[in-house]
Length: 117
Image (cartoon, rainbow, N blue to C red; front, side, top):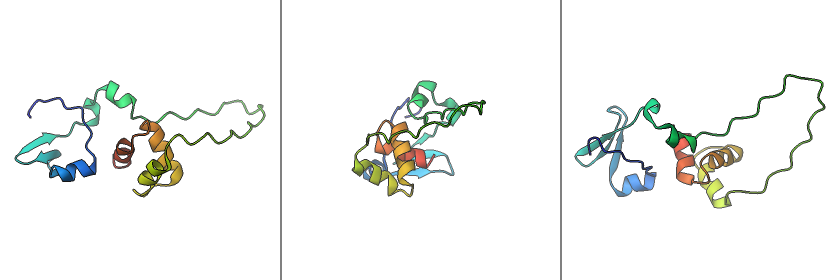
């Protein structure tokens, strides 16, 4: 496994199924007798990070002479209630869960991993 370039995200269910162990002391994912080092954030290719970064909030304008903006109508639900609840079960608010799912393009496993990163 040394030198292998693996573009894969394991959910906790997969870690358990394959009896993998996250060893933070050694900074590796242990699979049986093998171990895979975790990449430092600066070594993750930019193309991999683009889909995981939350959208940047718009900066407020410097001019205070503008009239206050009308509140935006609530967008329709993009994610299933089941997906939102699954992320909320990890201890985040509904709003934060929806934000994470937006950033993860609806992938519950990616949203969950963003909580712990």
